[in-house]
Image 1: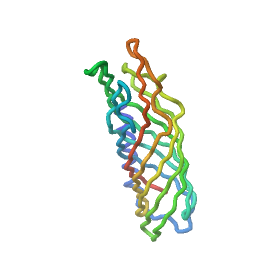
Image 2 (image 1 turned 135 degrees about the horizontal axis):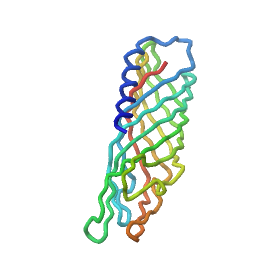
Image 3 (image 1 turned 135 degrees about the vertical axis):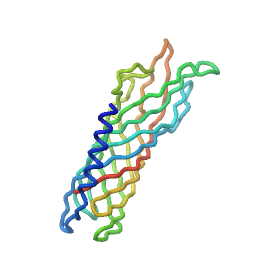
Length: 207
């Protein structure tokens, strides 16, 4: 898994170094790649006897964009985050585990470049996404792939800027669907009843 992450980051950085050319002013169809850091948390970090922590991770993706003012963008993102889950029985935590979960999300966004210069643009966008959450690790955790609710869906909104081919976005995502189903551990049922939220800082290239 670490090799996949390092190779993906290296490919993205290499593409950024090679993509220094300017786009044609008449161009209205674009393809891009991006990646960055993700901060995650749940809207109800403590529900019944379950406590979930904040977490950090990374994001890799690609997108297709049509138009400029407005523009329409579809994208596919792979997000990997690690959040701790504490199961409490009485006053003391019974189980504490850092769970590395993955999301594959497909999004459709509508955006607008409200500042448009030949080499610099400011923009905002928003739209829905739908996806799937799962574990890739072969290790045993207190949750497994059968405990995720599928599909996951929600909304995403963000602002960003573009300098020649370089694109930087700051995005907020909210999952309307709860990440986990109620699950059972040692004969006791635990209900998380919480929705995942993410803030992502992305760097990418658009051609």
